[in-house]
Image (cartoon, rainbow, N blue to C red; front, top):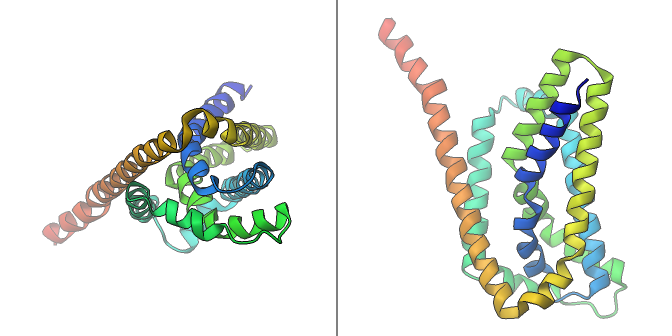
Length: 228
């Protein structure tokens, strides 16, 4: 009954997460780590993103209302973060971070992965993966679920999020193979191109958010003042 909308939700969620586009950035942050550490990092990041998506599925709308934050304000804040991150990637900041992360030969693979994870969970998990677009999309479909008041619909959304997360994990686990194919120079070029795209997405988020705020908030207030 709800399968068409669930499938649409899954497709849109995958497109917004864009794990294929984020993969070069993931590789650039973890290029100095061995294969086992990269696998643990991929698992940690995908579990984090899954948890964030499930969290916003059930609390996103209420959370934004509680703090009196509009989606447009959230979009602007996320856009600023993406712009800063994108400029850092274009300038090669991520490569400097890579050298800082290579530090503990005495640590086990999982301990090393945990150490690196704490330093890259922001920005990779959020806002690059679980960004404003993903959260807005989840909140939109969650509101639709509230209207339909069906447990089956909510379970379908959870299943879609889980399936997309597993696909994202599979893509990240293939990162080492891609790294070998493109080489260090190719990876550097791809990372900078992705940085430019991320910065552009950030500018687009800011532009959209500001435009919506002007149209939906500022202009109506001006009209009210004129009527008075």
